[in-house]
Image 1 (cartoon, rainbow, N blue to C red):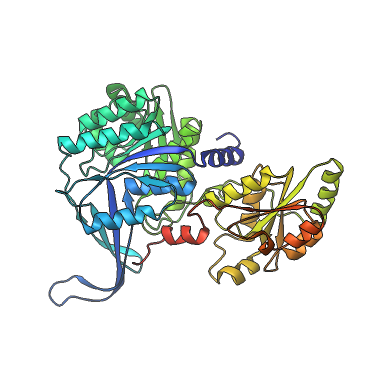
Image 2 (image 1 turned 45 degrees about the vertical axis):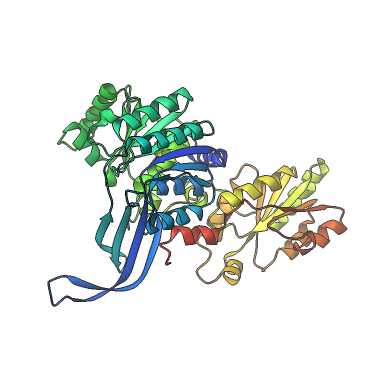
Length: 484
């Protein structure tokens, strides 16, 4: 990527609240966790002593969750049954901010459920409960009608095909045609062996195994993969392809050129849902105007991060930015005071806000943008690691003060970051006396720390409404395999 740090920041900031439509096979991912300490006397198999069961979104719903946690506004269409699993899945989706779920209710088929049995964090067995027959005519018509309505309010369409019955060749064709009539790009994660089912798509994202099944190639060389991909593009009238190659990274292929993107060094813990993160980031990048190589590079960064997590996980913007931030970090207080004096001589208004900003998320970005809009120069007071531990617990922060400071300092609307060790920024505000003090939340003005200091100096104090549903604690709970 050209200027990777700046481009990555521009991409994630521009993505905030952009509308995306995801259609596909939604499913409930259930995790049964326990311990194995003996074999069964009935057969040479381990006995799992169950400790707890947890649930999260899977399939197309996980693609939507990835997009929403990055800050996009997501509309989601998928099939659910009139069963408890369907209700559990709808509840899990409702917990994720910025997803509008429009389910197609199919009373005669169960909601797809994947149940994984784990011991010491390792999968022992997966059991799938599903019906994979295609939708009937009435259900197909409802899906297409709902999709056509939602296309009017979206800027890109993702089809997440897990071969669970959502897509027939005719349904796929109609969706692609309708999207193009709306001027919307279509990106598809394919499962059909016949890639002609996706004729006319703008981007296809198969893994190597899927490409081999679709084309019959047996070689694993990059040249062979490129040739097979280009053959698909020409035969199926598809514009571009991203082939994921596991430990070898990814390859983008168009009719004119191909690029191999090596994998990033990482610890692989669980590959579940990694493809969902890849297509979410690829689609987001293309939506924001990145070229296919830049978008795929962002997706490659995301893949290296998400495979280090357990289960079908997703990423916060701060996790991605931490991989490509510039050198700027916290600024010494004396230097900030010197800069403030200079800025005031130039007639500029000084703003201030503060927080832990652990795993910078869409809610943080929303607050910071609002703070910056009230002033000419924005100073951010950042809780040091010791302060975060006292306020949030011994397992926080997730990211160190150096990383959090660097991520914040490289935001284009932040002019300086100042660390403070205390539980509140009162001493810092006394030292800086900003013209505008802003804080996110449902605070009453008089309860904002430092409000009295700023008001006494003739400044203004503002409480900024939060972006509904976003917090680091909430993100960590949703991203973890959470017990129910």
